[in-house]
Image (cartoon, rainbow, N blue to C red; front, side, top):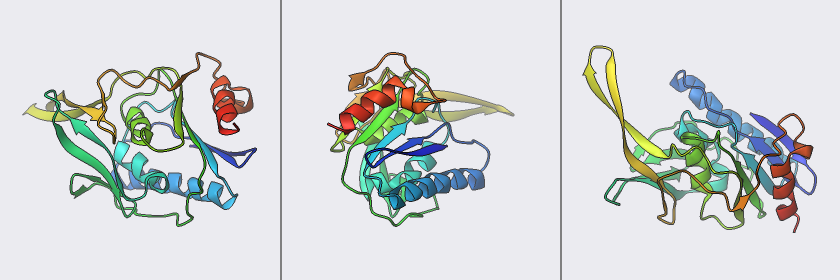
Length: 219
């Protein structure tokens, strides 16, 4: 996870793929995201650039719970089956992620600093996939949020595992990611503002997507 205080009260937060190791490590990942958000809030951060360009999967539940400051207690998305029926609702409650009424994270609220009113830019690209796409979708529909970059990989589906016997499991896509407004994402996410190329992860001040997002934030 990379974070940086930028000019004009803007915080930059790069959230990579989460570790898929065990529940303890994944909860630590959640807590680390919250800790960095808190550090930036203590520096009077009002606007945000959340970079998901290198996020190609992992545990979406911990990622979203780690960003609970941005969502509050709310429904933030859903899974929708092939017939168009919503089957599972994603929500944040008291800082934890719930799938319908099943609580899937335990860390709760680690950062009590309130989020200040401002703009949030989400950066995506062709590497952004799966859980990274879910995070971007959870921000869709919030006020003062825009998505910048390039179309995502298009792995915006839920998976279900079926045991085929000893050491064999078949995973099938059983639904599509859906945002809080009910829009279904069958082929990934198209940005609100397209910015092709120009990535510079070593020096974000020279990164074209960061520059374009900052220009919008400063309007």
